[in-house]
Amino acid sequence: MNTDLTDDLLKGIEVDLSEAFDRNFEDKAFFDRAWDKRKLFNPKGTLLNVRGGGGLRGSIRSVRGPGQVSWVSSLPYASIHNEGGEIKVTAKMKRFFWAMYYKASGAVSKTKRGATRQNQRNERLNREAAKWKALALMPVGKAIKIPERRFIGHHPQVDGIVKENADLMAKRIDTDIKNKLRPKN
Image 1 (cartoon, rainbow, N blue to C red):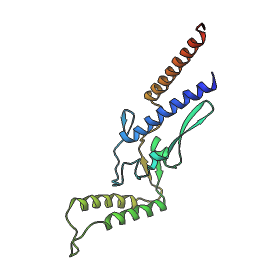
Image 2: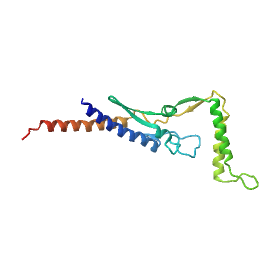
Image 3: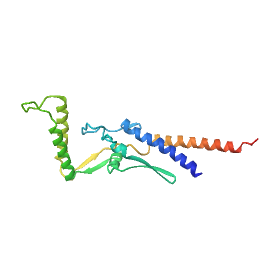
Image 4: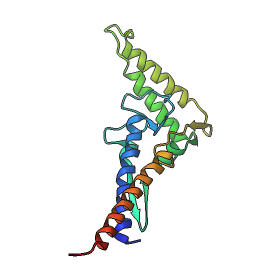
């Protein structure tokens, strides 16, 4: 097959699949399969798109090689979220959990007399602090299960996008051949 045609086919697949994979973050699903709900509260955004700069979502990019296209992330935790698995609690993680606990519990608002205000914000912060504390109290070496929240990979809709692009390329080739075979008057 002509390398220009292969490049055009791969570019079409790359653009369409990149949009589809990005849409998975918006839909919080892998095409038609919704992600599990997250257990820890985070006011900064959804699990895989926490930072305003895009977090995991913003780190995904396509890479084209000879006759292929693939997607990669520069973030080390991308594969554990995409595929699921277990991570072991480390001392560094425990320090982070304690820091998050103190941050959440320190944000609780108080009255002038020092009593905790009874409002929804404080209830939410207390729940968040309790979850961070539970994580911080885990022993080093304990496994934390990370559920699969696939955002890139094989799916029947991926096959459909590839087939759609291949069909368009086949029509283009057919039209080009017909135009070249027409008698010139």
